[in-house]
Length: 107
Image 1 (spheres, helix red, strand yellow):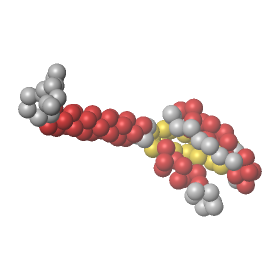
Image 2: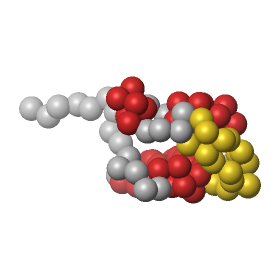
Image 3: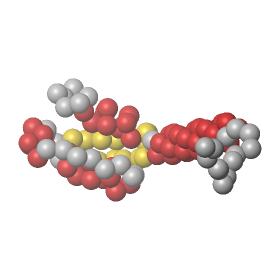
Image 4: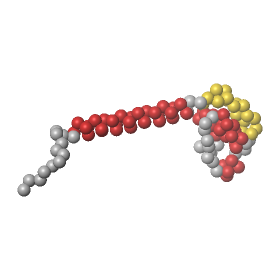
């Protein structure tokens, strides 16, 4: 006894699956490119700071206020540092942090 099929696909579904795969890869590539461009723009902010004899908390607060960076730190680390003087003109935030922590055990 033969079974009757109501819907009998004509041809194969391989071209559709191939097109779907290409679309998925294109979306993933576009999303990855967008996030990469966003991350590069985020780190390109330059700051000017002139702070004399301040504690680490206020220096980090000034960097947070002038940029989009946010820092997480332990209060014990703040107690280990003394007064900090920072005088930078039109520098990137990572370079400013390198100057702040230069000669200390904090990295």
